[in-house]
Amino acid sequence: MNDNGFGGYIRQRREELRTEDSDFSLRKVAAAIDVEPSYLSKIERGDLPPPSEKAILALAKALNENPDMLLALAGKVSTDLQQIIRKRPKLFAEVIRELKDMPDHAVLRVVREVRDGNW
Amino acid sequence: MNDNGFGGYIRQRREELRTEDSDFSLRKVAAAIDVEPSYLSKIERGDLPPPSEKAILALAKALNENPDMLLALAGKVSTDLQQIIRKRPKLFAEVIRELKDMPDHAVLRVVREVRDGNW
DNA sequence: TGTAGTGTGTCGTATACACTACACAGACCA
DNA sequence: TGGTCTGTGTAGTGTATACGACACACTACA
Image (cartoon, rainbow over all chains, first blue to last red; front, top):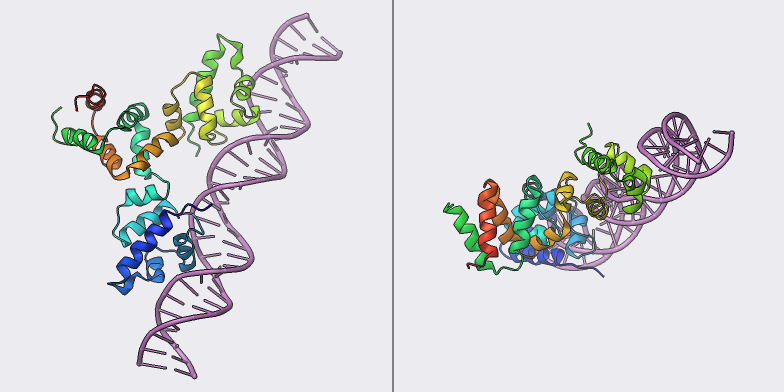
């Protein structure tokens, strides 16, 4: 009944880092992201759902992971991205739906064309 | 203290439609989107925050408005867009942030290039 | 054999979210 | 003047979100 992509992922990542550096015990990481150890424990095992965006971002820093990816695993989308979309909702809705089924390389090409300013 | 872009907007829109068609009384619309009249009343006046995504989508249909725009007014982003983003978080995060400050016409040009399949 | 560190189990809580139920006052009009 | 609309005010409810506090058992090691 419990999903647990998020919890499993961060537990694995934490234990990976822990083999090289003892600053990655559950308690240390919990302190680093400013939550109680028992809370983090339950999250890692999927006993509780993923925490707030704030805690996830702190976790991404602590574990040196990509924030957008961790948020996605938690079923969320960064509020800063949402803000960008909300400023021009029709435009961004169209873009995103248009790119939905495009292969990665095609999408990346769009990004580069835009970045290189050939417009 | 209360924002009220959303409530004000839909009230105005509803009253606009009401001048031509009496199916747009507060009670009728409330029934159409399946909420209590008092609830819709409070929302329109900004006494309560915007309703759920489900109700907003129903409202968009009832008032013949763009759903993504109404959701944005309500401070939300459609879950179907979020789902698309969450499937390839790093990719879409990059695209969206890249397009953030681009003028509409530049973004639209990208969309059209993609749609016309020159890739 | 104490003490420091490991993860975990139980219980409680504050806040927000998304509403419903019902009663009420005023306008309309038959 | 009785019924039928209109919008609105008051009060309460169920569920989800996002945690904290604290005690506990186990391991290591000095």
